[in-house]
Length: 181
Image (cartoon, rainbow, N blue to C red; front, side):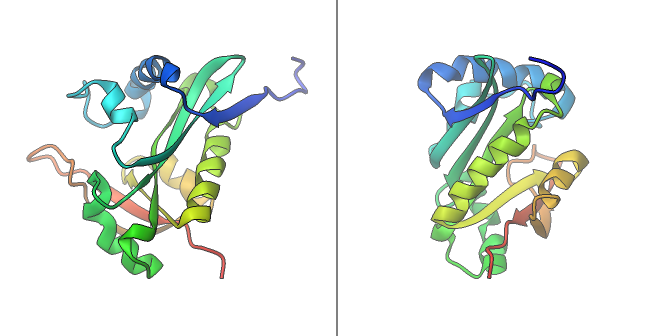
């Protein structure tokens, strides 16, 4: 690869065989990104990555190495359902039509080459195809908040996350990606 050539990032559906590499990547990036907030995580990382409400999941690969992950989940019946009243009000739809961008992380040592943008674009396109995109982001994580705002996401509410540790509320911004009129 020359200096003028961008690395080839491949985004593909996640496979079962990716989960060990994803758990390792999540653990490596956590000290810098603080995602997930709770660390060490109280259950196996596989349970954080693969959700019961998951509809789709993708990984980013660079030179055969898994370097990122994102999924689209339904909101109904999941941890995100406590946030749905604000999202449904903002989009003007039923909770069953919401599609949440979830479990989105990349290798921080590869920042600036487009991993996040590529994963985001695939997940957002799928969420728009199937419904009304939503997500939550920790309010104090200014970089991710800017990342989403720069891609058209709008903050519709800020609230304490239902998954906050007892006595330590964690404010999250609830965001929607408006559909084109």
